[in-house]
Amino acid sequence: MKKKLVALGLSALVASTLMAKEIKVGVLQPLTGPIAAFGQKTLDGIKLIHEKYNKLPNGDTIKLVVVDNQFDKIQTVNGYKRLASGENVVAIEGPLASSMALAIKRFADNTKTPTVTQIATNPRVTQGSKYITRACFTDDFQGKVAAVYALKHNLKNAVVVFDMKQDYSVGLAKAFMNAYRKGGGKILKTLFINSGDKDFNAQVAQIKKLNPEFIYTPIYAPEEGLFLRQLRAAGVNAPVMGGDGIADPGLLKKLAGKAANGVMYTDHFDAAKAPTKLSAEFIKDFKAKYGRVPSAFAATGADGYLLIYNAIKKCNTKANSNNLAQFKSCVNNAVRHTKNLEAVTGYLTIDPNTGNPINKPAVIEKIVDGKTQFVELVKP
Image (cartoon, rainbow, N blue to C red; front, side, top):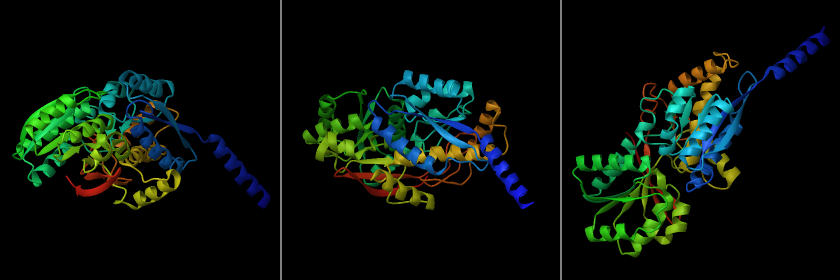
């Protein structure tokens, strides 16, 4: 009898193993191109958290299907279509940048594919979409944080430098200017650049003439580094603050040298201030694996995956995973109704109507010799 029970147990185990399925999750990130460093850091965070959370209670496993969108709108759309239709993933994490997320917005809705962008901050990314959710705050809040900081430090006039080609940059500049003016600040001038520019002497000359008390630069790190070098070389020493698009102290030091020192930016996470137990474990494991502390890109990358994993785990007991459309619908609904999920940047609760996190705080960081220095935590 005992042998029969053992045999039955082994049979059940074998049957369970044979029945276990592989569930695919797409990852769409810029792994080459001008912001490849951001995409790689994000992927590092996703891969690390996936190593820990890839098995489901019923034995199914989650496989990542990674596609490089090259920070290019055409490649982003093609990559998204490949994942949603060709690879038949149940969800997609990405794209990283706001302009790329906006490029795939209608395809997310058309294919009814749950999509989590971990760090695309432009408010329009989720507006009117039922299938795009974000794991981060929006530029409405990020811009206000910068404006409040400047005014609190009695910096009452400013110049804003932004990138006309990037939705992220345009939206964040607008959010900052609205909040700054409402608080009594004066915008002396808005100056435009374009992605890929290397010569900013014309803009720097105007800034020097205006002599502002504060300079706001919601642009990306490749342009920021060169701008800072030319700005400081011209003798302009006014405080400079950017958004999370310049959250790459190593690249800024490489491009700007000592001119990067003192530059501030708003961000999503500081590894010195672990907000949850899971966060502390993630930081420890990240250091052990990669030999460095995780950036906000790695942290929000992990958060985006956790939102998807948590939803899949719920749906694996409720929806028929053999019916892809039904399963995707369940996953999307579960992502949108996430409540108090322990994640790396804090506890995540998603507003099901907007697809945005509720009460997501920001941190202000300062660059010192190629590293970040915590300035303050700002809550909504």
